[in-house]
Image (cartoon, rainbow, N blue to C red; front, top):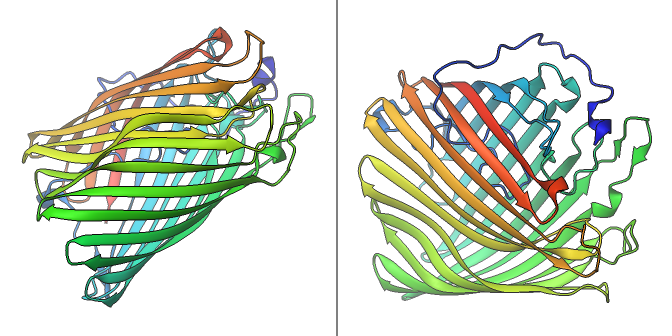
Length: 432
């Protein structure tokens, strides 16, 4: 870990003052974690009251909304270490845009987001995360449509990741993919058939003495075919069943440790959907998944779980987002095929005044590694707890000010992967 402290340099922004203000939280994380993190690249204000929303710019058959956030952050453990913690101040610039069609038939939406971060003392930690997404719908006839999505992300791996290679810079990786689907409604039954392909590509890193840290054995592609059947019980609720099969192929058949990490798996879900506009929308379901690996010494990953993607609006002033998710995740840790990750997250926004929004978020992620060895120092499990609370003040339709505090803790079976960190930050949001 000492290599993290070598070859650091000052960046061009100069000193950034520590945030000693009476800050309360921005609800979204200001720094990208792994791509499955619930706080990844979230906007500061979750849902803006109608009379404080920007009108946007009409461009023919499209509506353009664009803006940027300027954030100051102070993080007391930037390398996510158990001891020898190091703090730093960071400047974030986050431009974004949404371009949405307003056609009577068909649909096309384009969105882009960037998080450009510059550290005060440890400039080698600087990063630029960029996200692009295009999605739409082609109406065939009443009740039938093609759906499509194309996405591309250029991200960095957070220092808290157990797979971090301790390079002199955060490891960068790209995540790109597309999906296509067809939806048809037969009276009360709606069927959706879909196909998705994702590619993950990691860049090599270097250590403090200039040696190359090879990460090419993490490059992989994933193909998935899915079917969802939903029966409408009423105008406000339905029941559904979905099945997905996937095939995960690594570019290197055998990784640098001699393991074959390619795999195949499936995911079965059954549950209830709600569409009570203004009260409850989303899905709640039971799930079973399994992933089988090519490596003969690896055990399969499987398990039951509860999943949810729900927006509950108990009053006109309060919005509550629930997200429960389960998925097998990839790793390069020795003696393990991967891990079963379970996420439980709730995010709350409440209007104290029309211009003053209170925000809070709690999340817990349980990562259970499928251990295939006898080394007691190997990673078996991690539990990540996050808590955030804060305020956002809406000056007008175009200017918002937010500030906040976040706490994060990772526990593990071996202390080298454990850490705690506190973050304070202040954000100025501008929107056209």
